[in-house]
Image (tube, rainbow, N blue to C red; front, top):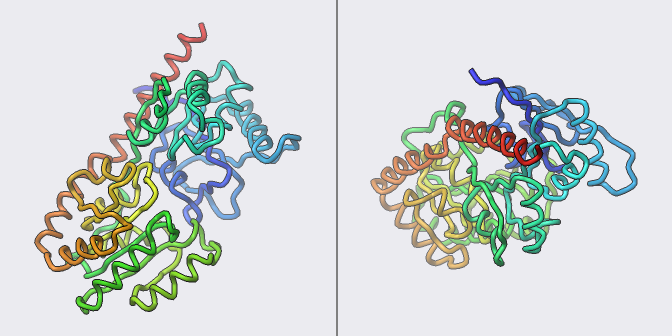
Length: 365
């Protein structure tokens, strides 16, 4: 049996590696963790995930701002733990800072979002320089295309997000006549489009109801924003229940009850984790055709432009009136979701790590 590699995984400073506070990146890191891996990130006020080793980044007096202090703290951890590979998530500036301090240590950078909006990766020349210094890994072909946009010449690996079917709750049968939105309740995610579409379809479907799970950001202390305040009034008028932030397992349970889950994102989703989880839990999925969502949903869902509310409402109405089609989509969605099974993706990640270390040692000998 192969020896477990010593991998140090570095979270973005704002990410919290705890069940009650985790955002999408922390959840994915926990889901994909390998034997021998240690995750480092900002200190926690609650217990971390129990099945993965976590160590807080120490606070270090350093003159160059918050990120400089964070890099200095991670540097201490690298010297203490002596990893064979460092994997940085979503922060090109942190990856480059660590490369500078440890030129002989393999560093990979996993990008979960559009790199063209990130510090040290906005320009094509910056992305080319980045790819020469670190191994760039992205969560979808859409992010890969964005990295290579404007003629950027770079080697970029794709390792998609995943779903751990072994820990998913059992879906409810028969499913509730429930339209569900789950995610950040912001304009980018099309939360207002969901409410507007529900306002059109619910009056003619009295046995159905609609619910939104989420807040402006992850965590129970998410602020009340002007957008949320305005949407709350619209949701109340449309008879849409706003349940607020819920722990991840509660979100999955709701997906397992809902007949239809809607992902009406305006912004191009780099991957579309909510869609994958909804399909894995057996819901019929209605998604925006933007970003990486079509890669995840494939032919298992139906698509609607979030800015065309009449069309979105029409798509929902058709599904609400057709239980046979919902059942077919449920089965197709579960089959599609199994293409992203965590066990398979973890094996791919382990092989990728081995290739990175091997290639790095050849490059530096």
